[in-house]
Length: 281
Image (tube, rainbow, N blue to C red; front, top):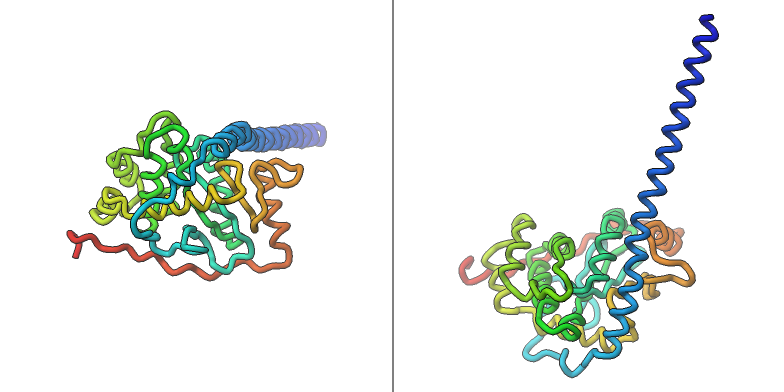
C-alpha cells in the first residue's frame, strides 16, 4: 500500500505540474496575443493617419520662423533627432511621432518596454523625430506644444520619461489639451525633477518651436506615409517588415537578425546640460 500511495502521490504531483505548465503556456499565449493585438490594432489607424498626412500636409505651413534652437544633445542632419541609448549600439531605431497621434500612442504603449529593454541592453540606439501632423489635420497646437515641451525635457536630460508620460496620458485626438501649458506642467510633475522654473520657461516661451517645425518639414519632405513611421537601420518596420507584421516578438527578432555577430553598444552619450533660467542664475 505504501508503494501504491507513493506512486499515487507522484502521479498527482505530476498531473498538477503538467496542468500548471499548460496554464503557464496559455497565459503566455494570451499575453502575446494581447500585446500583438494592441500593436496590430494600430495598423488601420496608421493607414488612415498616413492617408490624411499625404493629402493635407502643407509644407509651406511647417517651415516656422526665427532661429532654430535645437534641444541639448540633438543629433543627425540639422540636429533634428533626439537620441537615446549607447552611441555605438549596432542598430538604430528611428521613430517619427506626433504626441497627438492615437496610432503613435498605441504603438508606444504596446512596445515601449521592449524598446527600453533593447536600448538598455545596448542592442539599439533610438532616434526620436517629432512632427505636428495632427495640428495640421485637426487644428490646434497641441502637437507643436507637446513636442516643444519634450525638447525642453531633453534639455533637462529627461526626454524619455516625459515622452512616455505624454503618451500614457494622451487626450482624445479631438481634444487639444496639450496646447495648454498647464497640462504639460501637470504631466511634468510626474517626472521627478523635471517641473522646474527652467522647464516652465522653456515651454512657455516656445523655445524649440522652430526646431519642431523644422523636424516636421523634414518629415513632409520625406517619403513617409504617416505617423508613426518606424525604421530599423533605415528600413521601414511599421506596420510591416516584408510580409511580417510588427509585434513585440518580431521586433526582438528583427533586431537580433540585424545585430548578428555584433557586440552590444556601451558608449553613453554626453548628458544633456539644462540651461538655467534667469531665476536660477
